[in-house]
Image (cartoon, rainbow, N blue to C red; front, side, top):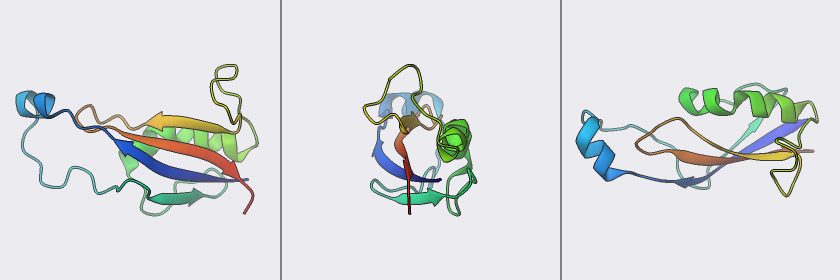
Length: 100
């Protein structure tokens, strides 16, 4: 089963960036609405490796038709909402099993 990964929303914490982060010009190139398709639970081309690390296990499970994470957390049992691990500007990703 294929898994569609959609970049839904980025949150930015300017106060944390100012206090803790060294200046970075291109910390994240992902855009809201951007999509990827994972086949066989593999990391799709162009996916941020840090974001992939946060979602990999969920994508692998969804690709096998598994789901219903945390006993009914999501309205669609073959989906998940996962955020990347960037503490300054986390992105939320919607993962869903699809038949394409």
